[in-house]
Image (cartoon, rainbow, N blue to C red; front, side, top):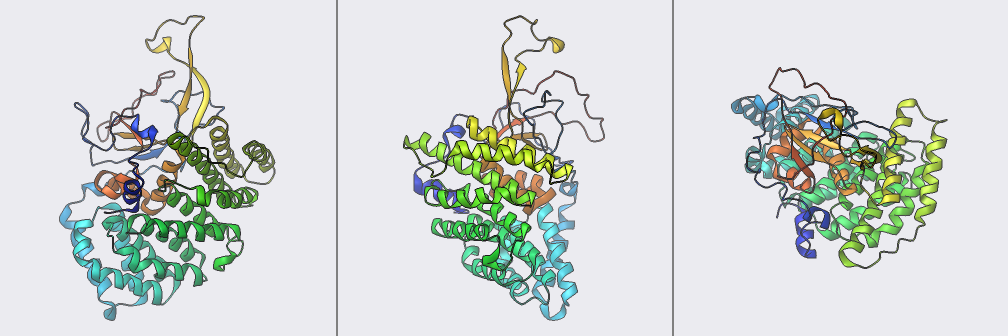
Length: 458
């Protein structure tokens, strides 16, 4: 069993959510006539719409992360990158002949190769030697840069191999570094690695719940419990990790109330990233409560007034206009508006309730009638990988995407196509095939009023 998520689903007797069951099978073989995904010229993009925008799907181009990955790594000859990886592994295992600076450079190169190439076949035979070498750099590195680089390398090793033995071998060391290190970046990397090894490296349900408690303590104390007093990036990392781990659990009732109180307090943070992550986790908890009631027909009574929470977030959106930069204000407003829509309408992230005509006469649709029907734009947050478009329509799925984006960066595209661990993490996404222009070809012109087609799973 490669990851904890599969264990949880089997133990609970639950396979997929009711929403996922209503869709065509995802992550199976592509439907007849579907284009074969191309490895070259990958593109990773995400879209998000606010309530006020009156744009068609084809016109909307705003990126959640302001990043588009145009990676050509998939075209590199196999012999080339595997030889480079083999050389880096040999260097990591031969510590006696390496310097601190040399190890930092080697670790960075190793991580880069693993991000841009699925390397399970190359790593698994040497995993028993690699893990101790990485732990030596984490626990006894000559400086924080070496330790941080080693944690990143370990995270990519976990995501690339998914070995069930990794949790027991590395978790305690990662937690010690998180608690004892005086470096902000190292604490952030350790928190991310702890969450990934718990869910993808052989962790248990008890271990996941223990980690959730540990992360909530960090959030409640503003980082004081791990000697990171009032440290925005550390608290933000703890919030993001909490969302990632919680997104896999079928029952959050035991953690929900305490976590909700901690996250609500962080809505008043002076750090926009903390506010955004706290808001997303609040939405995730209420989403879990709705799904619990949907699945069991039993109400999960959260000890929190949802109406007052909506009022508070609405007020915070107005107040933030006076205290943050224009860029941060736009990010915060879009995020909070998404959370508010979720709380008020029971929807996932990026849902637009703005209305559009069901047909458009300017693109060959039916003539306009006075009784013309309108429909909501619906979910507008999407990720484009090659010729596959994934709709992010739940907060649990959004939490996984956020973590994978952080760990893999531009390598998310290649890992989604080839790495079963990553593919499983995103298996609940609604997907559709879209046309992919030839390399070097000009992008298609945008036609005003032309909406996107209905997504279908593969």
